[in-house]
Image 1 (tube, rainbow, N blue to C red):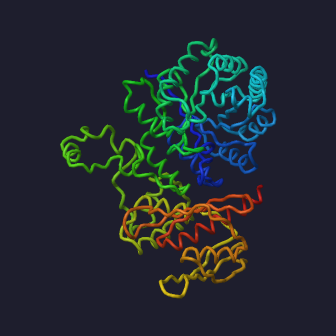
Image 2: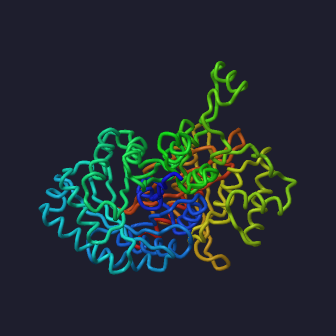
Image 3: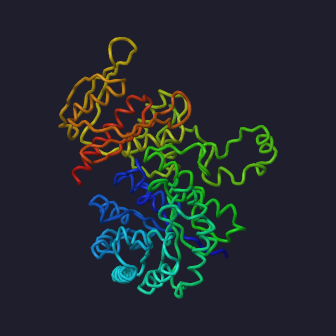
Length: 510
């Protein structure tokens, strides 16, 4: 039997640090449940000490999922460790993940500590974490730029103190695959008590080597790989879960290991994350991009028609990509809508199904084909949209090329339904969307800086739903808003209202 590589998913912690990838509590829980369906072994739910919101998210995820271990990240500080345990203690399988920098540059310039002082801190932190649980992981931050012999001492100290996993991160994406292989092999050969723990790897993609480094480390003996869905994360991101898993799965003869990942859930998981964070999957993305199984070259097309193995090393079905896209339309009943929601991984109650059914009917009246992506977008937009303080009721937009500048009239509701205050206004702008935004700003009483604005088609065709994502900043607080609609201007307005609601909540938590 092949050895097992454990998949540690940090989409909800490191992944959420990717600009624009912020998720609210409900979105994190839905993504955590999808990761459970995907079959990941460990979910790193967040950094509990970072904020009250992060603490509550970790706590909620710990209560929401059953099978995966739930890890909370903390610095090698007593208060951090205590707070982490408070957040994860009700998980079925809790893990405390302690980290401390070990490279010379980090110890000197960030920590202001000597190597000996760092060793003492590691020993103390891991022993304190072990007072709560025997499932403790220690990470040597910036391990790939640390002195190798010092790293041996770090690992031995952490294991002796009780860590069952030692993580050797390539924190800044500096290492190359052959170097990383040699480092992991060196630790496997020289850490005297390595038989009492598992080596883990966490690779960043600054030089585009995160997946290659992770695979090299697995060949050298690492048996836990830390990654994110779609490779999202700090700076250039992390090793992409789908790339690592499918490489191990497709080239079993090279690696001789297996994971617990349900590969047929890979594409649904990537699509779920893409919808939640409002970032489209790039067409040329390995494994799950729209072009991953597309063949334009005549030679390639001829070969695939004769035998798919000529140019396809895996099948679309193996990652959960199917062709039954158009099964919902204007004549579909509520049972068909419920079944489609279940196929997409959503367990909705009767009230939610009724909301979705109406949204599907409304959309089917406007476009010829309703795709899986459309249905999922409607679920996120109509069913799971938070009960916000500000709500868009109606708007009218004028855009032209003459002397009259673009302007928008907007009607919004403030407060709970049934007792909300309705406000109206109109404003000019450089364009129709700019006019809508300024109209919304004047009603809400906030004029944020618009840091980014993106529009993407949820599916293909001129009648596709528009997915809009905005990132705004005001008084040092940032927020991301997302929305989908058949009208790009309305989608933009809904996204901005969503961002302003999140901004208000973020200021309250600050």
